[in-house]
Length: 400
Image 1 (cartoon, rainbow, N blue to C red):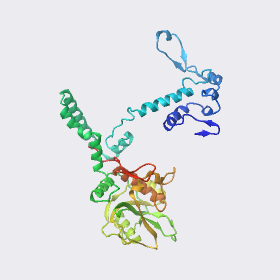
Image 2 (image 1 turned 90 degrees about the horizontal axis):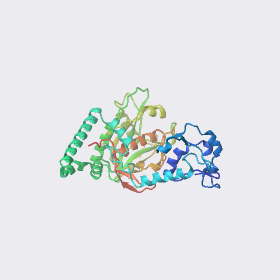
Image 3 (image 1 turned 180 degrees about the vertical axis):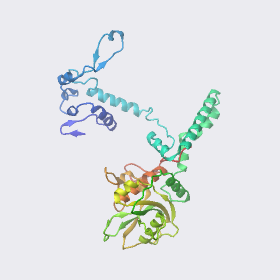
Image 4 (image 1 turned 180 degrees about the horizontal axis):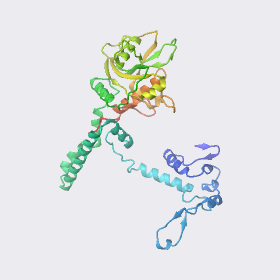
């Protein structure tokens, strides 16, 4: 990047991340290199100023008997270099790191983990989705397997060892995890609905809170000509609250008519959209951060996930008193990170459909995408394009 006539180094993506951490060791006014100067740091720092500021406790102890009687310090040199962190050495270190990591090593050889490849995410999912007895049992099983394999190696019984470890080979792990995943490039079927039910049940439970105002909304999953999709609405323009905004079907709880929040959600959806299938399958509740939801709209909103079936052939009729139109968005588009806009302190915004989705609806749709679709589907959009490919997205429930 440039700043007037000054260039900050290094300039590659990886080099910048490493160089940035090194660069912050220097005072702010000393971080830029003039493009008109030589390649040394003599144009950046005044060596005499730095030398005077170098503390005497910057000791170095060198190996060798002849060096033990001498005292060494790292300090500013006459050529302007600051200890060992001169410009050539910084770039040299960064290039060496890039070279080594690009050729492999532990950073490149990370395994698939238990349920997720990333270690931090793997640990989070294990703690949030499994009980202590389940984790202890799995740990004991793995320990017994390791002891069994060690005995096989001692006996040089490599044939049995190969059989014992075969389920843990990468291709077998990926195959097993893929079999348990949704495929968003195919119509939702009975197996997919079962995966969704289990996924919703595995979500971390949250402490319920009493609220004066309660409402329910519906994440209505469906197939449209065989494409897994989500049904949404655009509110009528004459409404006093949130006119012309995208929302999920649903509304306020009626203490007289509704026995449960599920009844509320389904009743409101049928009032707003006529012509929907009668046999709606309720898959579960999307557990959100109720405090955040209440902060967004001032109402405790419960998202209910349902499956409508194939609706491409239906003549849906939005209620003009409440709804201007209803439309669908393919689930694969919701998984495309390029279609989401995030701003600190605001709900996420989705720009991949016919209308912009934001506010509470954006928050709920993103939570469903991240907590359910991203964890339990094999469908992933290639970065930087609309081309769709199948790849494994490991999630909770993969523990062997």
